[in-house]
Image 1 (cartoon, one colour):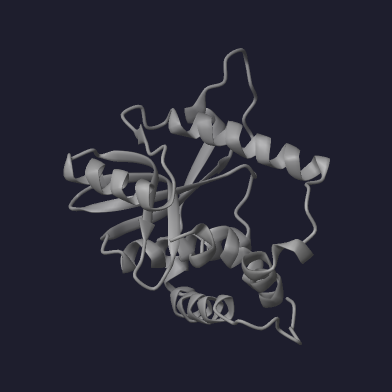
Image 2 (cartoon, helix red, strand yellow; image 1 turned 120 degrees about the horizontal axis):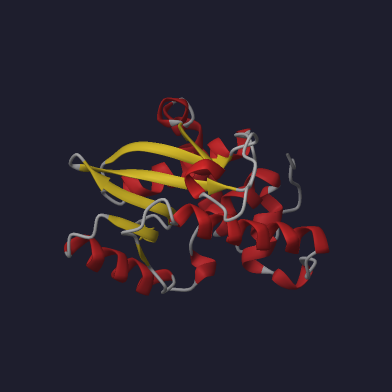
Length: 207
């Protein structure tokens, strides 16, 4: 199967913005504007850098370097081997959800899921996409004990080498996500149905 047949977290964000945008991205990408603005490129670069520092909080972590089905296989292999911390752990559910956790850590007979954000505070969209991750991993059979957001500490002042333990704040958001699960599950089902449409949507209520 190809990436176009799955609903990823970024696809879910497109659906929330506008279902027709998601359909075009999956079915007729030629009509979707290409290229990224300099601001977008900088945000992506910053996100990659921040995630690299966040991984230093989990020195025993192993990175899944494959993509899609191969990433799922590699993740399953690492779990079977008893690896306790996995970066970019990947699941693909039977109904087509694709999720890659920034950090997945085994503890107390279950898993703690961490998502890294290059902001100094939690935003509503962070809770929504973290709920998407929670739904995908639970649907794939993982027992998730907690979901946590790792974001930048606005009070951190650098003196010399960056200290990840001071650079970040970790906030547990598990309870907040439970309130969103029902809505997100319904939205993912609707999004998957939208992706499967063969004809271009004529109307769309963009958010």
